[in-house]
Image 1: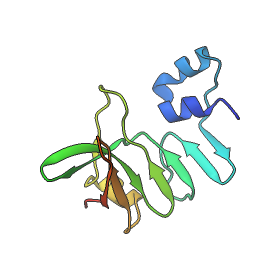
Image 2: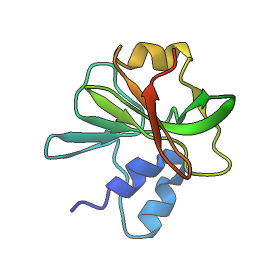
Image 3: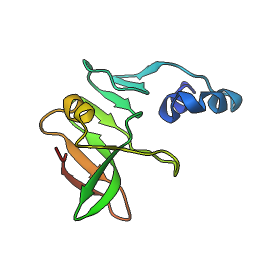
Length: 116
């Protein structure tokens, strides 16, 4: 398996670390039908990306979340110092399909329609 996945999943800000650990940095990487990239492309399918690090609120609580639609999966932030972009932000609303789901992280994952 190519080692470039580490750098793509972590984003360009940590690509130096990936390379130091014996990996490599790539703008995108294909594994079978999947394409991994840091910033989501507008015209794509089978894409996994990060960058926007979505978050959503349910019952007054905001949590990190995955966004999933028929074309892509957008990953949440994993670090304590990485913010998050509201699912209601116009960038994410335009990027995700009308049937997108937000999968909120926490002690128990919760899948809900993407808040718009």
